[in-house]
Length: 267
Ligand SMILES: NC(=O)c1ccc[n+]([C@@H]2O[C@H](COP(=O)([O-])OP(=O)(O)OC[C@H]3O[C@@H](n4cnc5c(N)ncnc54)[C@H](O)[C@@H]3O)[C@@H](O)[C@H]2O)c1
Image (cartoon, rainbow, N blue to C red; front, top):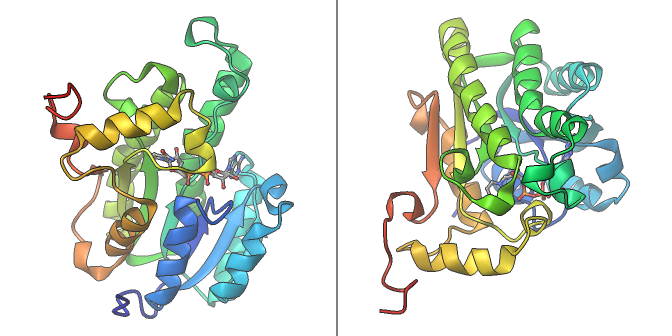
């Protein structure tokens, strides 16, 4: 259904690990819609090599950057601007990882070194991307900066552990920095709160499969897919959503406004 709504636009897409990644779908659709993109991921993720397939498919390059490293991010922004021949129009932050979840540490027995690292990877990196782009004046007027989040920032989902606080921080950065970007040159900053999705990051959460089914039954439209999320993100990079900023936008088939679903209790 490509309509060329990103024709002439340029941007950075982080977080495409494999073809299940939400960022992978966003990169494919951005390319289909006419955008020129640069892909980025952590050096360790690049070693898996799958991202090169995406780069070929989307006629883009891959620039390694650990999202916790200010130096890597500065290099990413510089190299991207060089490739684009100037400023860019969008940045996607699609990065999340919890050390305590990965190492199966309970929320009531958190290792704080790991918690700091989790916040750095999953939330502070968003501020780092924005601050670097801001200081280098690398966004065009009416550009769009987007990060992916989850409703555990507002409600309790016990197995999501410290990722809940990571997402709360991430969403807060979107609001706070959104003000400065709007004032600087009318750049939008938003977070998209996506349904549970079968990806590497998603499957890392304990009991994900059962939880995925529960959310699907609770949502009157069912869970939103990664493909549908990509469509929504493309609209947020386009010129059709210029005044949407400093928002957390639910893309979840209605889950966030449900109280009780007969389907869940077998009525
Ligand atoms: N899958 C879900 O259920 C779901 C739901 C809502 C929101 N999200 C969010 O969507 C985003 C993308 O996740 P996904 O589900 O596509 O999974 P994914 O595992 O495909 O993507 C996560 C990405 O983060 C990258 N990453 C991790 N550490 C990094 C670092 N130090 N530097 C740079 N990159 C790093 C990984 O390499 C990977 O590409 C995340 O923010 C996630 O929290 C996911």
